[in-house]
Length: 304
Image (cartoon, rainbow, N blue to C red; front, side, top):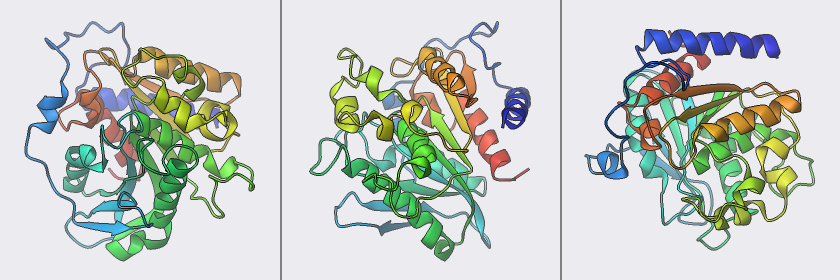
């Protein structure tokens, strides 16, 4: 595993050069933009639309948007999970539409999941996890119906969705008795966290965080070994983390702390750090950090 992670780290460094992005380190001598993007810079533009939407449960939020590239399939595809502090009122799946469209234009399908947030009936533990797990499992069983290649399974999530992508990667290692494991959980080939918030135990102690502490508390509900990826049983799926220097939600230290915690458990994690950008650039097509993530996705899916 360590050799594979080292190779992935070197590949990411090469991607940084090929994409003409800033080096993935915070001490790089690179000019920073006047200010990081704000939400209005992304949300104020025209929003692209998915090709289909399907349901996977009884709640109105139990839906998946499907983004299908043109041409004959099957198309390489990613499972996508939105953030928003685990709160539906803050964000739903359409916050990811711009990078979903960017992937579609590049010939990559997207399985964009929605789920109940903690501010909805049944959200939090265990409901939010059951939703995400059910929607991801559905990709394995129904993705081919929409011309998607289900043989390679990569999940990517932003912010609170980054936590859920890492959770999804560790989920198959949960005990069969766990109410959030499922009977046949999808096994991922890779999980990508875009400015993720992976440490729920720590999150409960940060009431001044932009997300507050209530989201982490509701998502953990004391079940850290089931819900907080760095405390969950280990699975073989590689983890890739992306953080930016001007991120007010998930700064560099979040990725560094997760990498170090997992290293102590014997699981290497690839961490890419991009200077000069904030939280929004991860899901904006023009973001330098998104360019790195997109290039990594292509490699993980076996594309040129």
